[in-house]
Length: 192
Ligand code: UP5
Ligand code: MG
Image (cartoon, rainbow, N blue to C red; front, side, top):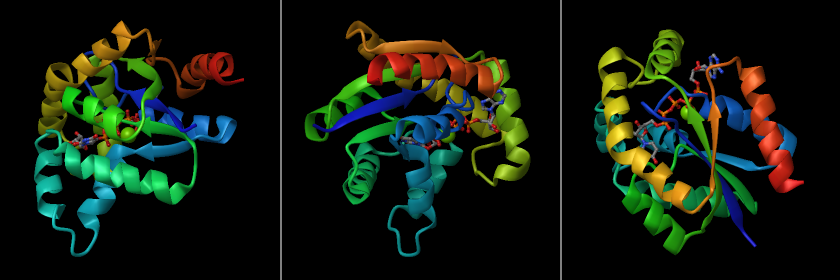
């Protein structure tokens, strides 16, 4: 059946823990289809004629969460179009209502990878990435708001999955290569 592997955020903040970076590694070694909810929203934001472009832009800048109907529809469409069966969904769900709705309507989470990273490390990474990323939210004001949103709304999702025993926590302050060694070990145990 269809399963998906969720790559979620980390404590004390949200962004910049390396979800995207590690997801790319996992795609190469395990053949998952990687879907980043944030990337899908950024594509939708730029799509000519999108009725959600302005809303997404405003909410991203404010570090707030886009209404789940929009994100879930984009994810469902991307899953369908991919024709795949094993998905690594990066940066989603980031609020309890999305988690419940997605599990009810689309698919249940097999497991959650949780990247634990101090805020100051994430902040430095994001400010650095902001020099070239062009992302509307890689600036100090948006980053601070993203951290707050993470703590208030996204972390409860991690706790919810922890109660189900589905969460693997990994510290991600080391280099991407070292972090990936830990990630790979978990995936080898779960999927091989
Ligand atoms: N880097 C990565 N790992 C490193 C390491 N181990 N050592 C040193 N450097 C490392 O990494 C960030 C930067 O750090 C990069 O420059 C990388 O090289 C370096 P990355 O892998 O991009 O981290 P990631 O966790 O993916 O950070 P990202 O900024 O993408 O996380 P966010 O959760 O903030 O962003 P996302 O795109 O998921 O969401 C953006 C916004 O979209 C949200 O704030 C929200 O407004 C909206 N959104 C929703 O509304 N709903 C959703 O479901 C999803 C998003
Ligand atoms: Mg990302």
